[in-house]
Amino acid sequence: MIQDAFGLIFTGEANPYMRDLTLSRAVAAVPFGGRYRVIDFVLSDFVNSGIRNVGIITQKNYHSLMDHLGTGKEWDLNRKREGLFLLPPFSTKDNTGVYRGDIDAYHSIMQYVRHSNQKYLILSGSHTIFNTTFEKILAQHKETGADITIMYNEDASFDPEEQNRDLRLLFDEDGMRVKELEWYPRYPRSNFRSCEIMIIDKALFEDLVEESYSRGGIDFVRDILLTHVHELNIMGWRYDGYVARIDSVNTFFRHSMELLNAPEAHDLYNREHPIYTKVKDEISAKYGEHADVHNVVMADGCKVDGTVENSVLFRGVTVERGAVVKNSIIMQGSKIRAGAKLDHVILDKGVTVTEGRMLNGFEGLPLVFRKNLTV
Image (cartoon, rainbow, N blue to C red):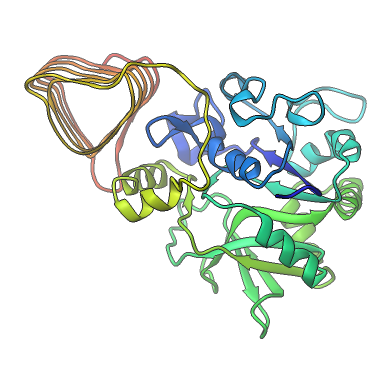
């Protein structure tokens, strides 16, 4: 278990490719997998690694996120010493309360960083989902004497219209040291993509942020990593497990559908590393006499008396008799009335689809309906 590192999660990234799903919430608070939020996975990774000091930087639309995290009780982070620290933006003589980029954010919470007793900082974003612990990457970081170690995986997929924070790594002959970085590449030369996890010595992090901030730097990757890639000893640590990058509606839909496949689901929901989330007591799902359900992730509290195939249903969803739901994601408290038919659809929380309504999206272009609509 890790004793000499603390975690810092930046959740302030704006992402227009998520469309209505982030209209009133941060990407970190987007529901995923039937009962979780996106942030639950990386936060659980920290907790399962033994890290008990985690700061979460927020920017916009963070009320849903803060409500979900609360005191950190579900992650065993409600402690007298250290624990979970929510770090919303605030105004000072040096900070307007509106971050231009993550360097602004890191500079504004530097007091929290300095007061942390651990030597190493594990820096994380909030778009990437995986299930691991950080003992091995931290051990390599120490053994190699790296200034920065970046966790990455091999991912050949590429769509220039959807890459929100795409950082690619190119290595030298030993396959460990990073010789070059690509940021938003139009034609990437590498399939090695950052998983939004970096380990760095706390003192070095302070120096780099303060120097970049004084020169007008905005983005940590662009203004620090890319600028100093040949000066710093940057290493890579390869992760070969399942990785989901939630950087657009299409990737959200695709990765949600992948949870219906046994290998991906077993890797992500590893019993050795449980995923923690806010607990909500619900009755078990109830199936009516006309229910026909195949290959579905279904949370507690659902009531199904229609047909559901290849879909993800969150808590408290109702599918009435004669309704058909296929290849869709239905979030908490939504109601599908009798005779309605849905295919390749994403319903946000509290959406009601009226009787007989037909909603059809397409592979790669699902229909999305924002919270609390009646369709």
